[in-house]
Length: 317
Ligand SMILES: Cc1cc2nc3c(=O)[nH]c(=O)nc-3n(C[C@H](O)[C@H](O)[C@H](O)COP(=O)(O)O)c2cc1C
Image 1: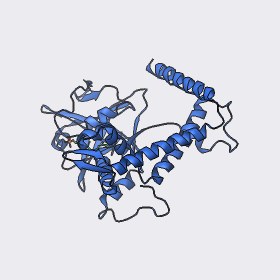
Image 2 (image 1 turned 45 degrees about the vertical axis):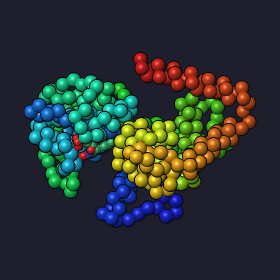
Image 3 (image 1 turned 45 degrees about the horizontal axis):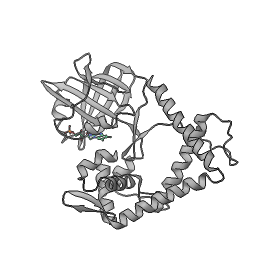
Image 4 (image 1 turned 90 degrees about the horizontal axis):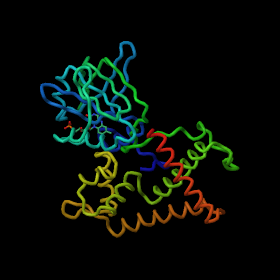
């Protein structure tokens, strides 16, 4: 929700959703904790991971007391922290849902203690369980790192209940001059600035339509896939499960979506809001490109598409 002049505040016990959204302002990475003990293979998506000590090398994370993986993680002498890379959202979603299909299609090798190291991670930390502490509805687990591996991949980011990717802060925190960005600046600097400014304009547009980012995502996903259940929609929306449930409840309350049987469908007022928003975004783009000829816009699009393709090719090699 847009904080505006009256930022949401309150008692975290009375308003768990507000409390969770407030905690979502703290940006984290995403990890999958894995372990195997007495034939039970477990893995779960976790963002409570943090470094604790360099000497000795300790890390920590917390696990819900009602997690189906709890007994194995508490009993296993060793576990692995797999820090996810930015292209591993599907892996994060797969390990965030209870069930015995978590490792389906997942490629992994075995670490020094035989624990699963997920392929494609940004980093892996092989740990032995050092200590366990009670922490409300969670247990705090402390691990001693026995071996680390850092891969040259960008990490996946989690903020405000959804996935994000890192970009360098535009111009190191200073906005480019008001008289406009110099076309002589490096491409990367111009892109970052254009991306940040465009995002800011679209964010403002969306909140003036009364939608949060997550609600906007869910609304688009429901428009695209009418009749799907919330469970099927969440992975498509790329919003974390609890935050997605909150967004769905809010959209129902606003009358933008309705439940039909086990599925969800967009209402006329939801479609009108979303289409109005898309028209406004298109208008922003048009106004930003005012003064550019059709040909210039076409060439800019081609150059951008070419740059993206070439950059992806370069990263892949
Ligand atoms: C981004 C993200 C971060 C999460 N962080 C935690 C966490 O720190 N601790 C936790 O217990 N559950 C966390 N969860 C929820 C678990 O992944 C989920 O409840 C669990 O995998 C369900 O499987 P289980 O049956 O093993 O409990 C997180 C989920 C997501 C999507």
